[in-house]
Image 1 (tube, rainbow, N blue to C red):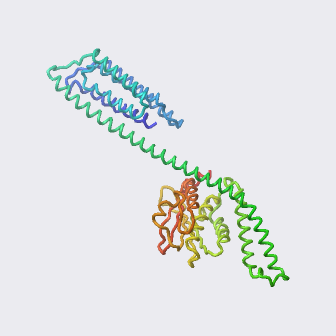
Image 2: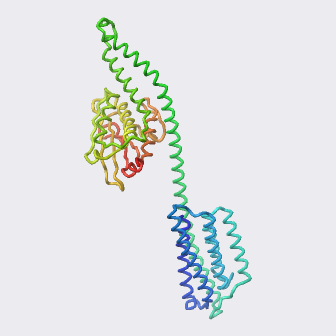
Image 3: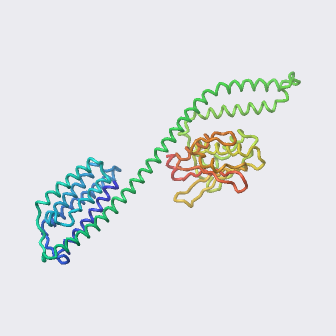
Length: 423
C-alpha cells in the first residue's frame, strides 16, 4: 500500500513538471515541441493516475495490499509513457533519456528481482529503439544545441537525485520499520510459545499435586483430631495444635487454588477495583500470614474495571516476590493503584513496594524478559510469566529502586488496550 501510494503522488509530481516544461520550453530553451501528441500522452497519464487513486481507495477499503504484479504494471506504464514522450522529443539525444534509471531504482526497491530484470530488459529495448527511431528536436537556434543539452543533463541529474532520495530512501525507511516490527512479532511469538509451554507444565503439575495434597489433608486432619482429643492431651502432638490448624488451612488454600485452575478465565466478567481489591488482599494474606499488606486505590482508579484473573495473577507474583525479598521485615508491603491521564491513553498503574534488599542492576535488566535466578532462590519464572501476561494485555512491568530502600514493581495497563482485550 505504501509503495503504490508513493507511486501515485510521484506521478502527479512528474506530470506537473512535464506540464511546466511543455509551457516554458519554447520560451526558455528555444525548443519547439510537438504539443498535440505530448498533450495526448499527458492526458492518458492523468487518466491512468486517477484510476490508480481509485485502486488505492479500494485497497484501503478492503485493508489489502497491492500485489507485485500490480506494482510492476504501474511501473511498466510509466516506462512506456516516458518512452513515448522521448520519442517525440529527440529520442536518445534527449538529455532526459536517463530517466529510465530512477524508474528501475524504484522497481529494485519494491519488486522481486525477476520482475526488476523484466522491467530492465523492457527499458533497454525502448532505449535501443529510441537510438534509431525518434522525432528530432526542433531548435530555434541549432548553434545552442550543446548548451541546451548540458542544461538538460543538469536538470535530469537534479530531478533523478530528488526522485531517488524521496522515494527510494523513504521506502527503505518503511522497509526497515517493517523488518523491526516483524522481528518484534517474532520475539512475541517466541515469548508466547514459552508461556504456553510453562502453562502446560503448570497444568500437569497441578494435576499431579492433587493427590499428595489430599493425602496431606487427611493426615493433618487426623493429627489435629488427636491433638484436640482429651484422652490424647498428654501426648506430644497436643503442643502442635495451632501449627496443625495452620497446616490444614494452608492445604485447603492450596486445594482452592488448584480448583480455580479449572475455571475458564476468559468467561470471568470484569470487576470494579473497589469490589475486587478487598477479596484479593484477603486471599493473599491467607497465603502469607506472616506478612503485612496495605492496599489502597485512588477514587478514580477504584471505579475502573479490570480482568480479575489476569491482573490478580500478575499482582500475586509481584507480591510474592516482594514478601520473599522483605523476609519478615517490619514495614508492611504497599499496594497502591492510581489512574494516570498524562499519556495518550489513560493508564492504570499498580505499584507494589517493599523494603527488602533491592534488585541488582544486572539482574533487573533481564527480569521479566527471561527466567533468571535470584539471590532469594527463585528462578524468575513468575516475573517472566507476569511480564508476558502484561504484554498480552497491552501493558508492561517495570522495576525501580524504592526511595526508602527496597524495590517498587509497577504494572501499567492502558485503559484502551485493556478494554480491547476484554472485548
